[in-house]
Image 1 (cartoon, rainbow, N blue to C red):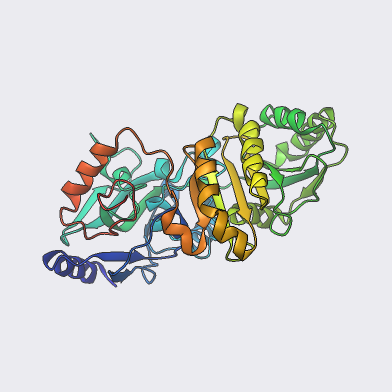
Image 2: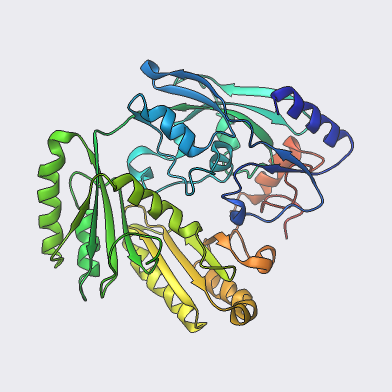
Length: 398
């Protein structure tokens, strides 16, 4: 579907007050409410690379382009974008931006929104518009492109995204280690102080079928090093020595399999061991993340469900997955959701919930700027046709 067809479809829907549901990769569908009784606008066919200037480190793509497709295009010229999206063969650029996804390398490279330098979009009435451009510093005043990041497709339909690309690191190596009893806190502290700084690092409990590494008494860690080839072996010696000081006797290294292991770590939270499971992610400070993870584990244990935990050591995100049998899950999921949000008010659902999903608290604590967000929604989409009800700032969300 080209720009003109999308514009015409939106103009018709707006004139007739018909709701429109946007469809692309659906990877982040669990992070929002469902749209019901709406016309479907399928954006999955919009997968063209529109402009690419390797010398300028800029690229423009249609928003149906997948993260994997974009990665392959850039890798051919030794460049990359740290979108770090789960299920990259399905995750679309538009979906990543609409969900305001931020990955485990954001402390080093920034979030996808930080690398967005321009966009094209269709407003709810079909008007086509642009913001920004193809140069890095081209915005005077408010950067309209970033307004749509995190809007879950409720303000406009993203058609095109322009990004600043980054040079691809020469080397990538993943370190895997099982933690003996009593070493978790020391390992966490050592990882936080590693130099060069890790591109990504996790503490893992569970996820044994999804993530590499052998479980230890205190869980396991996975750390990603990205650097120049001249630094690789020196950094490896330093990192192993630091982990040894934490009481970790052995570290396994992945070179050829580093990117595959990294992808599995990204994918794990979105993978569910059946229909009766639910995954949350809560932001935290790195210094408090382990305490929050332990507390969330305690809540899941109280409901006698299986739990899997993933802590982003560098950024502080805590991911918790709860799963159970059909009968207990259906009975307990509402109470589990309440208990986890009492503990971690900002926790968001990433995936799962089954038939109960739309009755659960998808977003957690609502922001203080809610009234301004709703005013923006009213200005951009006065008839409320775009993805109605999916977002907390939509007046239909309750």
